[in-house]
Image 1: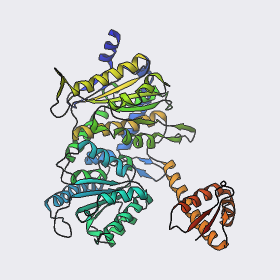
Image 2 (image 1 turned 30 degrees about the vertical axis):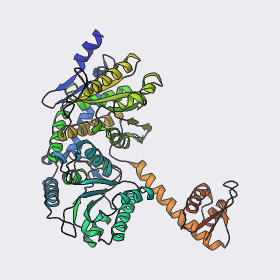
Image 3 (image 1 turned 30 degrees about the horizontal axis):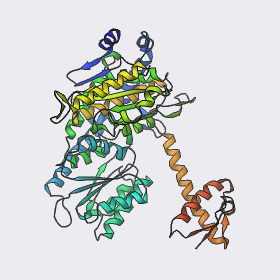
Image 4 (image 1 turned 45 degrees about the vertical axis):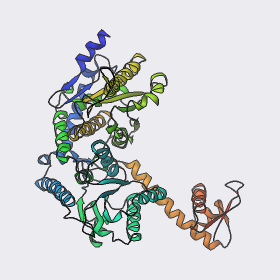
Length: 525
């Protein structure tokens, strides 16, 4: 252990002014690792500088990537962008203040008591993380999310809000306005308001692109307000735009603190010296652990309840950014890092057994805070529950290391809005640096777009199949329906669609027989 103590001291990154440290001593990289990676990480620093200067980073869409400007508008490549960022922040604060004061009021003249957020992906994950981390009992609005196109989930949500929609402010977030899950959620919310005898417009706010489908809809239907969602901010890095700041401000959180924390971490992670740059250290540890190919999963283990959603948030940030089939040269690489995790010490009773003694196909990232939060009760003489929390973290870390399992540990002095901003900014920068090390583009998502297009093809096929059933005059097998719809190669998809429609009363499809997919017949009622 003496050698490990020396290794800890040698490789610990610690910045007291930042209130942050990163321990990589339990990552088993060789002594010459940093020397070997000097040129690659140098290129990563150069690529990051170009990104922040306004280079086109998303060639698929010809877009800049500018989430770093959101917390440092003076770095924006044009004066116009700087003004937009600053004016939007001011507008967010002013609108939230008017809601809190009652100047923006319900139809009956009272204050809004609930906030419903309709979005998906980063439009929901960011605000969910912020709310779970910074939420408090006395916040001015109770928070609800509609982040899926699941009819049962929508019904359950609106049952919770029964009798309260008149006091509920709904924020709909979609950059294009055409994201189907969000559009469906908006339509469900609108229908619920109408069923309650309320107009939706005076309760609705849009966060969307200028002149998008949603933007035009909001204007035409008299919505309360509209906030911009710029094409140079990706959903997974949008938490410091109106996407995340508007809900946070409405809930009474310290958005200036969040921005200040992110800005401070950005400054620390711009330093072109690996040993003085925590994001570079983190990215290099990912590269080491996975052999530069993502061969090992990243298990994120935050030891605070308020960071219980952090692993889920990082799943999108890391996996959507780094999960790429092709590298920058067009070669097939199937790069990526799988992310999963849950809060400690909950995991002591979940999958730590697997991590210590099962397949050694991961590395862990522990997250802790020195300050335990509110006054802690002694559970034994001189021992608090927070002491036990630290004991479980240190014990788990040691148990993993003793069995050849690697880990890094992030330590924050406290957990507040500023610290959350630092943590998010740290991983945003690490993702960008790692992408250059791996030779991929972190800022496009062709796989996501492929899934959306495939879903639209299924919906179009469903319409063709229904038309074929109506015209057949008799029940058809899935193969016959697929042939009649002009898509014989899609027979399995046709069967899945017909089975789903037949299982839901009111959809007009009847299923006959149950002797197997090939022989079942479907007709229209």
